[in-house]
Structure formats: C-alpha cells, structure tokens
Image (tube, rainbow, N blue to C red; front, side, top):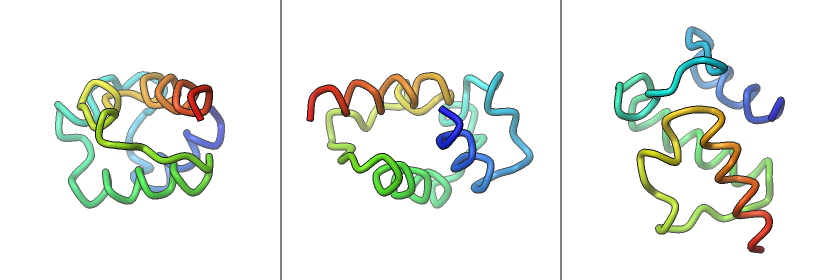
Length: 76
C-alpha cells in the first residue's frame, strides 16, 4: 500500500489519499493523471489492468485501488 500511496502522491501531492474516496467521480484526478496513475501501477506492481477493471468504483480511493491490485495479482 505504501508504494501505491507514493505513486498517488507523486501524481498529485495536494490530495489526502488515505481519506479521499471520490478521486474519479469527484474529479480530483484529471484524465492525464488517471492515465499516468494506471501506467505507474502496472509498472510498479507488474500487472495488467484490463478493460473489466476500468470502472470508476475501482479507482475512487486508494483503498479500492489497492484491493483491485491485490485481486489482479491473485488472478494472474
């Protein structure tokens, strides 16, 4: 989780990722930030985030992103 928080903080250091739960729906992150975040997550955790995971609810909070990463790792 620390690596994920580091990725998110590098993208936008002004957000409290431990409490924010509306990253996508609340437009806290813009489209370029989202693309950067997904690329960094894939590289860092050596996973592929396929189309079935591309739903707002999977990216609205650091906790949800972390749960998605863990699920993808278990499936691979």
